[in-house]
Length: 136
Image 1: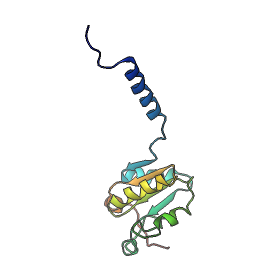
Image 2 (image 1 turned 180 degrees about the horizontal axis):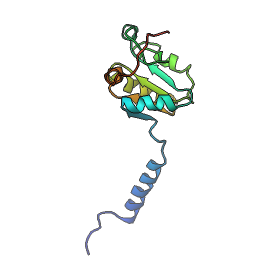
Image 3 (image 1 turned 135 degrees about the vertical axis):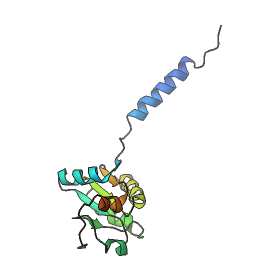
Image 4 (image 1 turned 90 degrees about the horizontal axis):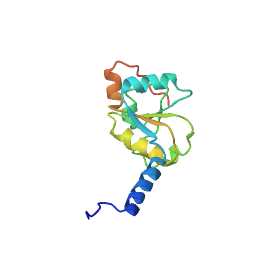
């Protein structure tokens, strides 16, 4: 008689694992390109556009209606704790790296709908999309 690769118990353990894994929370961070980012901002109800660049970077301009919370600041998590976790958050930085990390921090702090701009504001500008002076 051939030896089975998996016993019936092994099969059920693996099956239960996959069922439980599929029931976990869906990914709350989505990385999207600048076209999608712009479209979703325009069609979302009261979106929160979050610029996580430094003050020096923000002085060069921001996406319209963005607020700034510097990801590298010591109080980043304290500041995001004051935001509405039920809002859809659109986060960006200069090129997408810091905002990806910030998006994961947001998700880890209970934000359910977080979109990260791939390529950051650099990709946004390359598309010719609007940038305005920061009013914060």
